[in-house]
Amino acid sequence: MKITNSEYRRRRRKLMDLMEPNSIAIIPSARQQLRSRDTEFHFRQDSDFYYLSGFQEPESVLVLIPGREHGEYVMFCPERDPQAELWHGQRAGPDGLCSRFGADDAFPIGDIDDILPGLIEGRERVYYSMGRSSRFDQHIMDWVNTIRSKESSGAVPPGEFTDLDHMLHDLRLIKSAAEQRIMRRAGEITAAAHRRIMQFCQPGQYEYELEGELHHEFVRGGARYPAYLSIVGSGRNACTLHYVDNSAKMRDGDLVLVDAGCELESYAADVSRTFPVGGTFSPEQRALYEVVLAGHAAAIAQVRAGNHFNQSHDASVLAITEGLVQLGLLEGEVDALIESQAYRAFYMHKVGHWLGLDVHDVGDYRVGEEWRVLEPGMVMTIEPGIYVAPDNTAVAKKWRGIGIRIEDNVLVTTDGCDILTDAVPRTVDDIEALMAA
Image (cartoon, rainbow, N blue to C red; front, side, top):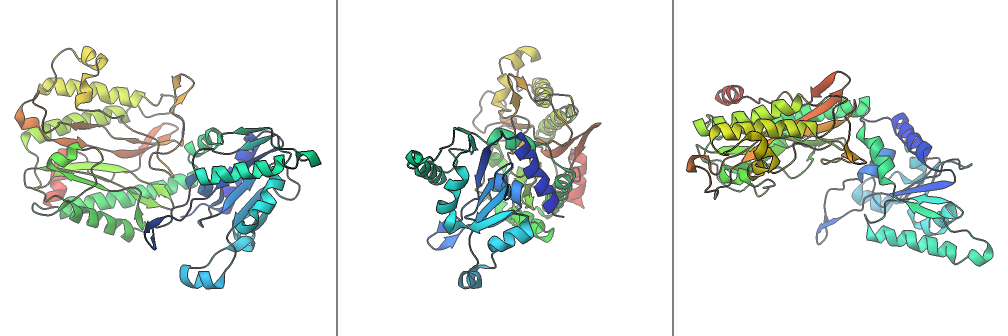
């Protein structure tokens, strides 16, 4: 279940078709990062670089030059080195980039200072995402200054720089059939992991024990790494939106909020479920959970082609505000409470975000002044929540310290939407039944 070379080639072609004549695009790879002293973090390729190449090695540079006679797709990468490969594994090298990854031309990264200025020279426009890496920004400026230093000899520096992000990220926003298959599988693996921890969970365990079970199921399904730091927050910890300490002992009578997803072939899943540590919701927990579930259903109903991105959020706000009024956590007219954003004391985030190669994936949410219209192939999360702060004295004590989020991954289709993570129980009865089993 991988993206083929022909798809990477189509992606590069689409981007080059959007570029101005006599232009060049430059996209650096991610760098290997030290974790501590002489140990390194697991290498994760830059998503834009990976989207266009499928190449997973660090310290490389991708160059696109539409219309170049000797090849439009140029790569720079580390050379083959038997001694280094003995320790760290095989490299592709320039020859491998051409034979296995479809590069028209490839050079050792050590030769980039000699070659790339010549490729930039005379171009009317350079597409590059300035500001992501100060180190690489300086390289770009050095190459341009090298050209400028030769103006008296007839060298022509580039006319202007244009940010590459907008064009490239619009392409990434619509997922191909192959991307959808990978994201569906990532959703299935993540769903299995969430089901596993619902059945594993017992009072007296520590939050990190659930985290370990999640990651075990990710790896067992073929996804070696989580897409982000897993959140396992029990009791009042569930009211901290990005709680990742995962160190508390879980108590009977508390809820535990788990926000975790695997990464498969560099594509992310992102799922949240909230369930009772002891297997049974209390009346207050059930009541608040049903309000969040109503917000989730209302939001899902608005995810379809032709609707705009924020309609699902507005629908969730209406359902949750109505529920909070019915339970007495908010007082007043629903419309007025929404207008004043009173609900934000309990529901302070958006209902979702784009999902893909990045957990919070790229793509504009607005086009001009208008919310973006949904199109088939877009993938987003739907994740309403209610978080009653432990110190919120404006509400009855029985509600305080309860945090609930329900999150799924949703693909926009031609006739509605498809929940890619539907295999995780969502209703109170289904969760309690799974935990009892």
